[in-house]
Length: 409
Ligand SMILES: Cc1cc2nc3c(=O)[nH]c(=O)nc-3n(C[C@H](O)[C@H](O)[C@H](O)COP(=O)(O)O)c2cc1C
Ligand SMILES: [Fe+2]
Ligand SMILES: [Fe+2]
Image (tube, rainbow, N blue to C red):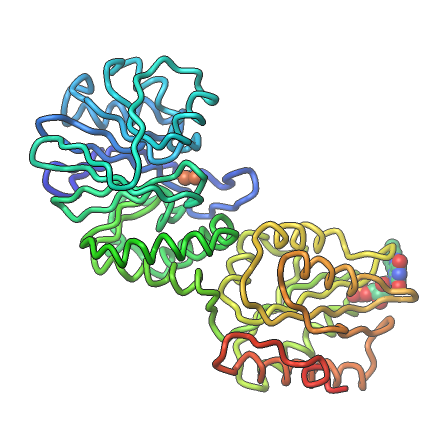
């Protein structure tokens, strides 16, 4: 069913209720939606298509409003298959429509679909008049691919932002204020943490550029999830906060263990953090969903990673977490490693090296215990947790405290 979102602007996308994994890596507990928008004026424009299996739904939703043949422009904000997959089916119905997209997007679409469509490439500031309404384009590289752009409907102060500001969330409602906002914000954070985190510098520059341009934004309609119509600047501000490397004064202790020795260390560290009055989450990686853990990394100023040593290295559940961190490159974390070992050890060093490769400044040396940590070692873990929490409480962005301050040596 289509939904009117502004005068002569309609949501005509598709709801994917059952998607549980996206990019084959990212868990989507609430499903998702692929949002397409139809702007009906003297000329008709469709902004973004949907994922290929939903092509017929898109065409049906458009047909509820106008004969699809009336479409003059198909704007492709981003070529990734979740937003372009339906193009081959759609373009068969509207072969004369012009595709409007960035030059990079054109190149990607050509390599994805080998099409014979008519393209007009656009840059920031280019405009297309539909009649009463004007589409204006803003290139937004790496939000989420190099080809990405936003489409701005001037007369409605409506920003069609594609992946940016979206959330993987299936819903029969179309607006943020109609659903559980707690879930929306969790999904916004999870999206940023798992998809956009490596590109914070570019994101910051783009958001500054949009703010400085002074264009009014009354509504942000992304291409996943629900639409921001009440104070949409809230989500821009949240992106700014993360892009600035800010996070809440919380600590994430992410670890794994075979015989509970490292778990005992994790508990003592977490108790110390809690005793200092700082919010802490201790998560065992082999029992956790990695994409959820990355959301906690984004939202926590402190990150403590632990593993016992197995064959000189970390446990198998810790390795993919560290590998993903190297790609996601979290900003401004206060970080440390810990773990139990039996003889030569090695896991703590592997963690420290991986964190450094992820661009994280690590407090070294990490905390180590042999076999089961004894009373003294557990006390040391507790005290370490307390001091670590005190450092997290400081207001200034994580200037790295010296190891002796944190480790108490
Ligand atoms: C299969 C296996 C391989 C291990 N490899 C190493 C190793 O290479 N170096 C080391 O110091 N300890 C090694 N250990 C010993 C563990 O690190 C030690 O038992 C540790 O206390 C386990 O902590 P956990 O209960 O947190 O898993 C190994 C243990 C197992 C079961
Ligand atoms: Fe994307
Ligand atoms: Fe997407």
